[in-house]
Length: 186
Figure (tube, rainbow, N blue to C red):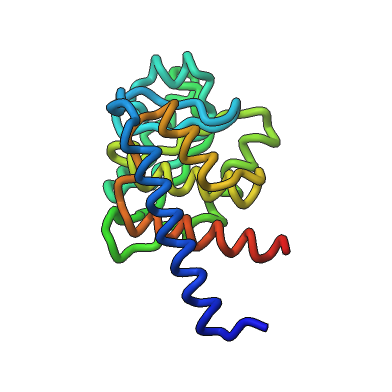
């Protein structure tokens, strides 16, 4: 039988190992290209500029925009649905700092993405640079609702999006979520 102290040390060792693996995967990733990344047929990760590129939104078939940046303008698509194709907009303020847990928004993110999927829509999940907040929340959604493994998700994004998820705190939040999901499946 394991003592709680031993389990805690094992979790800590797993966490450090996972962090090292994530770092290795992003180490050789290409530079972020600034374009939206198709993560699934219904989910894109992008940045603030992508969210205001009406031609791009229309071309990609984006119907839902989820803004998790600190800058919170009013719905910029209201009255311009025909021009942009965006019919649904959601925003919340998530900070990109080392003391903030973006996963507190994961239920809202999941509901918004599932709303888009149910209506055969596509979501652009964005923050300012498309590097930390949007990537973290997209990975959390994919882990919790699509059965993705954290390291597989990080590898996929490192290959498709480039260097991202730079915020170590956000990485740690995802590592803890991965551990929680893994433990729940035992």
